[in-house]
Length: 286
Image (cartoon, rainbow, N blue to C red; front, side, top):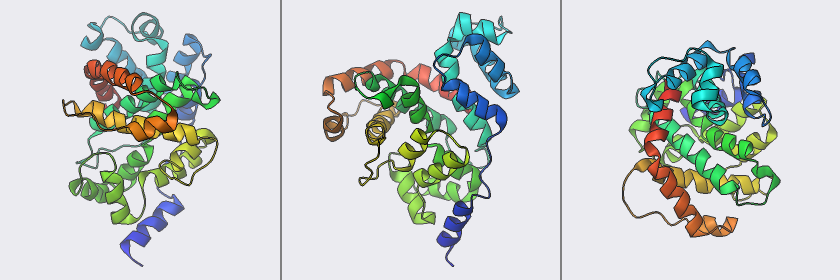
C-alpha cells in the first residue's frame, strides 16, 4: 500500500479527527441563532474560558482605543464589540482552539484567518443582493468561515506532512489543494466534509463545502457554493495587499448575475479595512 493510500485510509477512518466538545457545539448553535440575546450569548461564551479571555482582551486592546478598563463580557459586547462581531469571533476562535495548528511550523494562521474573514465578509455583502432563502446573512457568513476548515483539520492531524505541503507550494488559491492531492490524495474540502459530518453541523454547511468546486454538483446549495467560490477568490486578492490588476471574476459574476461595479465597491471597502481584518485574524489565531 502506498503512502498516499495509507493517508487516505487514515482520513477515511477519521480516528484522529477530534469530536466537538459540548461547549463548542453550544457556541456554534448560538452563533447561528439570529435572535439570541446578549445575556444568552454571554452565558454560552462563558463555557469557554479561552474564548472569553480573548474577547475581553480584544475589547481592552488598542484596536478599540481601550486600555484595560472592561472586565465584564456583557459590558464589552454592549459598549465596545457589538453582538455581530462577537458572534463571528466566537465561532472562529472556537474552531481554532479545537484544531491546534502550532505543530506545523510553516502554517500561517494569521494568513488563514485573514482569508477566512475576507471570504466571509465578501460573501455576506454579496448575499444581500441575491434573492435566495439560503442566503441568510448568518448562514452565508458562517459558510465563508468554515470553507477552509478542512485545511485546519489537515494541519492538526498531519502537521509534518502538511509542513511539506507548504514547503512545496505557495499559500495561494488552489496551490495548496493541488499539492495535497499530489501528497496524499485528498483535498481540504474532502476532509472538511468528513469533519463537519462528524461534528454534526447543519447539512447546508456539510453539502456546500464538501461539494465546493465540483462542477457536477446540482444540489440546493449550488448557488451558495458558487457564491463562496467567488468570495474565496476575491478574499485572496484582498489579503494580498498589493496594487496589481484585479483578477477577472466575470465568469463567476455571470453565474450569479452580479455586476462588476458591485464587486468593485465591496473590494474597495474591504481593502480600506484590511488593517481591521488583520487585527481580528491575529485575535482568532491567538
